[in-house]
Amino acid sequence: GQYLDRIDATNASVNAFITVDRDGALAAADVADKAIAAGNASPLTGVPIAHKDLFCTEGVLTTCGSKMLANFVSPYDATVVSQLKAAGTISLGKTNLDEFAMGSTSESSFYGAVKNPWKLDRVPGGSSGGSAAAVAAGMVPAATGTDTGGSIRQPAGLCGITGIKPTYGVVSRYGMIAYASSLDQGGPMAHTAEDCALLLNHMAGFDTRDSTSLERAKEDYTADLDKPLDGLRIGLPKEYFGEGLAADVRAAIEGALAELRKLGATTVEVSLPNTHLAIPAYYVIAPAEASSNLSRFDGVRYGHRAADYKDLVGPKTSPLDAMYMRSRAEGFGAEVKRRILVGAYVLSHGYYDAYYIKAQQLRRLIAQDFQQALQSCDIIAGPVAPTAAWGLGQMADDPVQMYLADIYTIAVNLAGLPALSTPAGFSAEGLPVGLQLIGNYFAEARLLGVAHRLQ
Ligand code: GLN
Image (cartoon, rainbow, N blue to C red):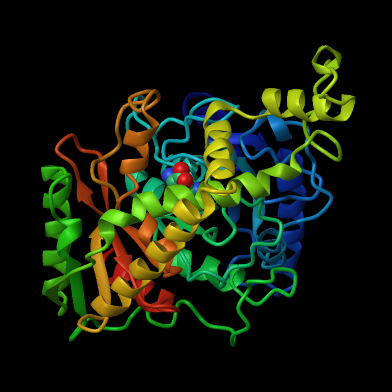
């Protein structure tokens, strides 16, 4: 009730929620009360959460921040949603995002831009900006996010909360509407690493309905929360501390690193020499997969269908083609169209070898960089984003500048590694700065433990 009131009071200014499911939440709260009274509570029973609006939720609108799905009510729950429901959490609703998770600012949503609760003229980051802003503004204690190229870590960093992208394959993608399937991974966003660990315990797990889900023994992600940091070797990639990193962000990161050294860790310089290839590789691979994934939105089975398209019918255009064309033209926003065009181009005959295959080769090199660096350290640390939260509208007309701001986050997705963002002090203007911790495959518990000590 208290959180629903807070949403009522704050959402008009922050725009973090697309849908508030008041009735569903109150009904779930009754169930939780009964479970607690009967002594059947799990650690998450009765905890209010929110889901990024690209997780399918049975009976509740799932829009992906797009006009294309503005009328879409899923007939089933995503695995993440059903598992968190089974753990007793109460979903208060669905959070705003960049359209189809394509963006770094949460401004491209059909439902309007999300504002950073720390300063309402700033972006919250993206694409999981609604989840990050909702947690930072106290509208909900925790939320789910997805991370294809930084979309959990970067908004967590810009909003001063904690968010972890697990190893690819740890969290089921079933019911998580696909952007770039080989990169997408769901994860928790909350105030603390401890809360993220508790949530991840109920988000992770093998799922036969996701062909890339990993079959592994169940893990307790809280296991390393109290593990001392003595002897921990933290690698600092020299490429992550060079030109382009704002001085105040660097100072905040240095402060957090000094704290970690005080706690017993040592730092060593490492190198990720192919860092400069990550953005070009990502912005070929992600659009390529997106162009294929988004071909399902054709106005036939679900989603937006144009009311009128007869004028497009001609000698070369059938009524069906005309309906597809107009529905997609009306349903998708500019950034989504841009990515579909890029994706279709790099996959087309004659360009496939030059762009797509090349990008896959770079992806391999980038993954090898991390394995090389992790020979001389246990985890890697660096910034999440080059600056603190920038102004709303500042990058609106310059997608390339926006893509460049993903420099520290996207290589992790290309490699499939786990990484988190944890608060690391403030910028010169008093805005939050995130510290990124990157681990080897399945090092989630260790990463959360290091963040917990720092918090
Ligand atoms: N900013 C990146 C993009 O636009 C990452 C987004 C994400 O992780 N979903 O693709």
